[in-house]
Length: 93
Image 1 (cartoon, rainbow, N blue to C red):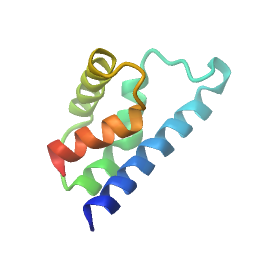
Image 2: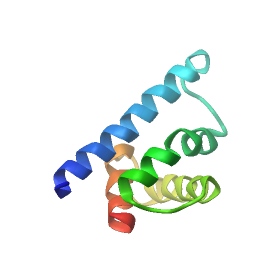
Image 3: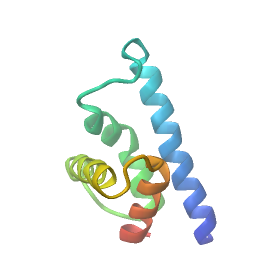
Image 4: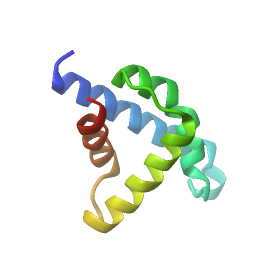
């Protein structure tokens, strides 16, 4: 898999997760205080397989929380999908 294909596949996985989460929480317009837990459960298997990485759901929750804080501090207003995709590829790609 080329780097660009891997990037595109991972970004699509994050986009799909975002859309699924928004549908699951449509009554609250996507608001969910425990979103990292939902995302970790939704993404764990596919993300680990795509990256060839081994991490627990708990570790993934931690990483998602840390990335959210990092994004808000370093790149407020940036698109989260691209930010998360680049980060995961740098760490696990």
